[in-house]
Length: 195
Ligand code: GRF
Image 1 (cartoon, rainbow, N blue to C red):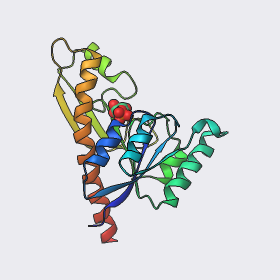
Image 2 (image 1 turned 60 degrees about the vertical axis):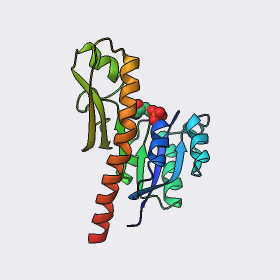
Image 3 (image 1 turned 135 degrees about the horizontal axis):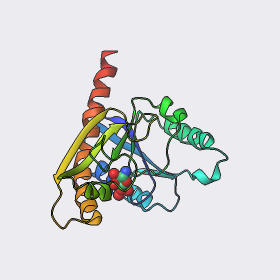
């Protein structure tokens, strides 16, 4: 099967991005990494892996839509068919979400629908949950909603802090994301063949 040309959008260290590239899945191929922050560590990590990496600084655009138009153009210019958000810290507007409907995936560090938004690890601890984890889902207009493509869970241990929990969940993310993205890419390829 021809791997689906995939881009990853990041804002920071890019550990999930690195995991997505390093997993060497045959259903998707990471052809581009874009960061909205020019100083994101992940850009160098992508280049070190031989992947084209661009900064498109949201601060240099007059509006959210102008920024998203630039993203959209960069993605289309490289014939990208699937976009994975990995620690991308900009909320996308219905403009970009609409143009990439069904082709925009995100990872979130909680067992959605629990704890959309921020401070997910602290909130799971405050609620005295027995379990916590991460979710890969399709992006829709409402933040951290959208069809769930995969989840991985772990037990919260006595003595866990938000930091210890975040570190264990991050390890889970690094295996869940490549696996869920590859499954979804297979589904897209299948749908395209049917057409
Ligand atoms: C991850 O916890 C991810 O779930 C969340 O942001 C964090 C990004 O980390 N959306 P990294 O940049 O992939 O290391």
